[in-house]
Image 1: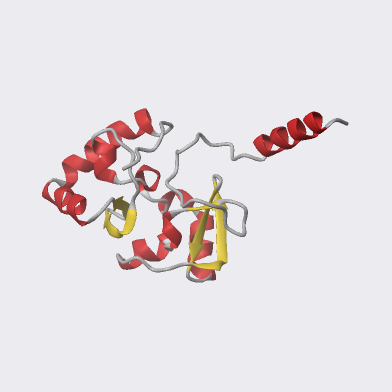
Image 2: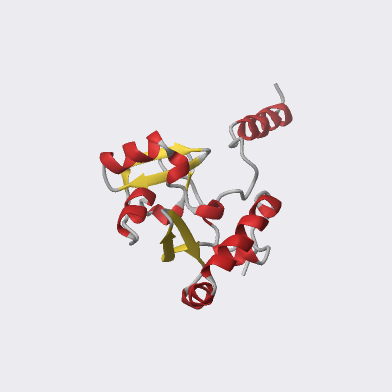
Length: 159
């Protein structure tokens, strides 16, 4: 086998191992976790966050990969809740900034600036954006819901 054939097989193998979801559909950290997937929600436990209303750091020892994204949990109990019903705990808008999605853009969502509304987790880019969201929560959520299906598979906006 030639070096070119080996290189081509390596590239094909890497592509075959790629996640089945569209690029940039979820807000993830750069690099792979030990589970072989990119980290979602900056390592914050989504179940604990929704239950407490505060970001709670997850642990790599309690990792679940859902739809190609690794989520960390603070313990086996929150991990089991997520595994039983992931849709109930996934951050809205793929974990991207809800305000950004409401205006048709995809920006990083930082769990330090987030809100739990009607048992759903919404994350935001920064404190200023979070303040803007708080001026019209229902309108922003409604606009983001309308836009999400249109932009979910588009590239992330770089700041």
